[in-house]
Length: 400
Image (cartoon, rainbow, N blue to C red; front, side):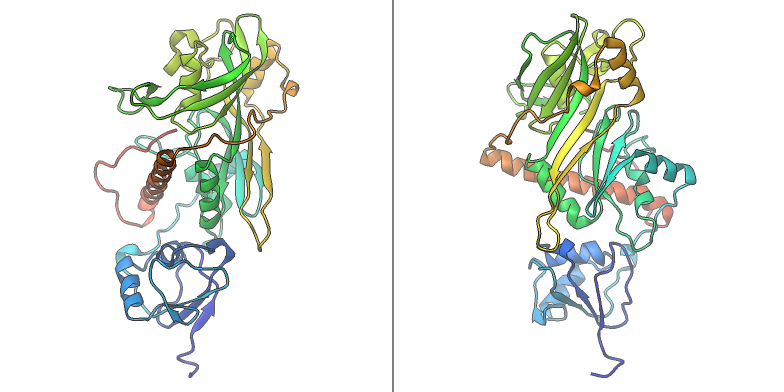
């Protein structure tokens, strides 16, 4: 083979990066892409190549894996070589330019950082900041993630779970598409352990227990509010434990969601008659204490324990992070006489509850739906930076 016709051998381009397309290219599959479908590999690394082109290349034997013919649905393994023929770019699928962040936005993002690993960025989200954009929501965590990937070839970090706008605390962000898939499986499979701290109105009669109450969207609220629905709701389970109490006025509780429904902790605590302090949406006026206790919501994701993706054939180990309380929550704890050192925020259960086959299928569908929404959100947010214009009447972003 002449030098002119020699393939361009390299590692996969970072997500969204452009590679020279006028000659044959050969890429080595990264460990981060181990197990991914071939068509997904293209979407991740060469998004400007459309699925129709990939299918045509596969039918004609132009795209090959380790020298053999390959189908779009074939799974790749780390270390394999993917041969990509010249061309294939669709003008409307060109990678989108990133919106440049201001110095203030970069500083805001860095101020949230509490831990970093090869696969994750862990933030302490402040109350009042949305996790992701939506209708009339332009300031959010997702819009600040480019601060952790300053280089053009750096993969953009990805959200893998959400916190309500007014909920503070641990928020895990995946560094790469591969680690995002791994962490998403942990959350969907309920192996991730999340412990929340909350201040609630009154004191539960039972100091430790389980709330098992199915939840559904409340009719007439446009899906913005949930309620307990014994007939048609989805199963929702929360473990709780009273850590301390301030007479009969308020209690400090630890909460661990065993399922992941929208507004689950807030609805469950209100349902047993002890709404979270400051949660007027579900507790009404009764959710606000008299005196100088802040009217902001007192719900904080205190601790997260999750398995990290394997690396180099070795287990990734446990990621165990704790987030400090926001100022208003810490002040209320002090005023009510609660000592944060009184609890290490240990998980309240050893293993996730067993799920039925139907629940597993539903979880898989829900995860796929959330992933598609997240991807659409990313495209909308970067649309003003040189990509396709937004379609009129864009949909609302779903908040959790």
